[in-house]
Image (cartoon, rainbow, N blue to C red):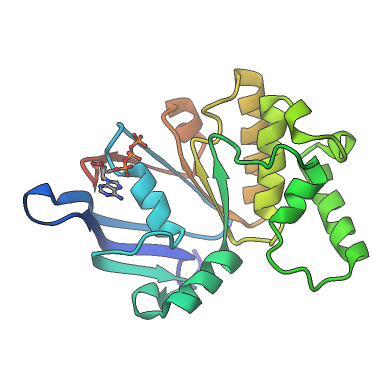
Length: 226
Ligand SMILES: Nc1ncnc2c1ncn2[C@@H]1O[C@H](COP(=O)(O)OP(=O)(O)OP(=O)(O)O)[C@@H](O)[C@H]1O
């Protein structure tokens, strides 16, 4: 076991929304650790706090209690600008509904994931082509994403999420809109990405998908079920 700090660590984390009678404790006393090259699956009923947990881990939502350490560094004390930079350099996001831009090609959608374009065009093209090969979409490179199957769309979205070489992939029901065969393709791709050293945190309602992850937590009313 590595003595380095975990990539992601929550210590007694809490997130509440609203005040007074309408106060909702979406997360309540969550502690977890995720190391590089490992995966965590989050399950739980609707309203149990899964999306809030993913948003907290992705620095889209701040904590109202406890601590969130990223590579051992307390994110609670960081100014907003640094949080934005950390989010962009650390995380790739994958969604159930893909969120691709319909009138762009597959390669153009992947390139959208690059927020800055200081690298020479040839280098960028090479990087994008390598990603498309990794996700098995080389033959679809210059097609409009509207012409792709659901599984292909999700693999394009995964390539886009990887384009800045994130340390962590955060996926919210990534197989929720896919048939079984396409879902299996996406899960195999995730296995390869994790084997390459990226950490994966995935929300899923599917227990067999969750069972593939190295760690699983089940949320209930904002708490981890023992
Ligand atoms: N921005 C917000 N303002 C107020 N309440 C919120 C907000 N976001 C989430 N909540 C509440 O926090 C609780 C947890 O919501 P969350 O979306 O994290 O659950 P979930 O498990 O992801 O649900 P689903 O599976 O339906 O997406 C719910 O009671 C929800 O209404």
